[in-house]
Image 1 (spheres, rainbow, N blue to C red):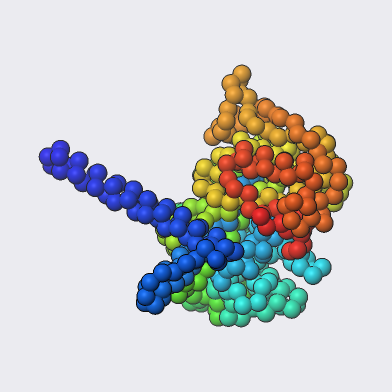
Image 2: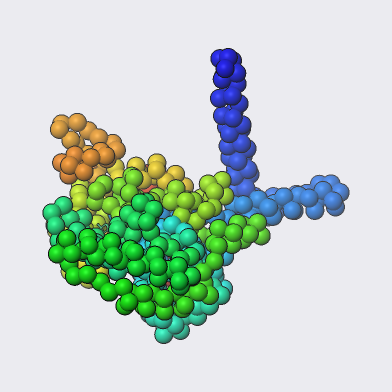
Length: 488
Ligand code: IMP
């Protein structure tokens, strides 16, 4: 092929992409302007011209409004447990559909509403709001027995689940041998500190192309045949590890029974979501875990087995990137982590203080979370990976009587200053945080409902950590209840 032809082929698509990006940016800018106008300053809208032009203009504004309000990816900017459940619950008010795209029942999203505490593991938190549709996407690994138990638990709390839940027929299944393998590996050296829900082995089978999916479970004869072969193979592995073999009959029976319970919800969720988008529905993509637990970008090997970052929302649901409109990153006003692996800003005193307040115990396993100071090196990097547009800062009240407050602005490794975390787990473990100290506010923030009602030192702290992270602050949470939220 002549060089010029190669040049042409490689340049023109890039230009088209750049052009369309520019166009999209323009559109977004335009839409933001429109939103501002719609919000308050309606007097600025002066239409001059014929009624048909006016109609066209109205339609244009309506379309732009739809675009700007549309699809939101919500992710954790730290090591999970950022308080995403509550923020998702608040954002669900603006959404029609809430989708989970990755992870399994290792997640634990806590929502407190009218004094009732709901902990959701597999079902999107949107289920708590009437009229919202929830989707468990293809990227999620589903333990059908656990899912049926979760549905039953919600029924008992008065939450109706019927036509408001869809489960992807492509979602992989978590089976009992996955859980036992997970437990067995955790008994050995190099443990990760997993939730022991079988998540790693289930995603392992998916990648090895030997997994079972919801579609298999919907065909009892196919399922039983595949399951039998899998149990024979896995029993050999379990026995080699010193664990008891499992009974095909028992697993087959309980899974088929769970499958029948779930049958009404199983669907092609890709088609459902695309049709919904065509109809202008707004979708909230509910992330589980956090950026530094991402299988690719996290602190490997101390990570979970899925893509917890923004890209996972596309692969885990089949909704393409150009249909995503904004990314909201959730981060605590400090850092926490459960399980093994480095937490560079870990601080024993802060950990003890938060535990003594009854805070920072895991929602899924009840384990004590390790706590540390806010780590801007980590959140800045999370901002890059996720393309975070807006920030929701949670647990501000956890720092209410802490003074001074430390903020990690860089790491030091072998005498060198680092502005981004190293990829290697050992290097990360050897990083020393470089801190700056800021003043605390020494008073409760729980009653504040507007940004201006927060103490000046708290406002300064929030602005500071948002600036260091590099995204716009749009929400602050000062307590676990729905109402204890400040929207900026
Ligand atoms: P797994 O996802 O159970 O395999 O656990 C892998 C790592 O991710 C462990 O360190 C867990 O503690 C952590 N992890 C998994 N799910 C969550 C979560 O929802 N919040 C916080 N940490 C999690």
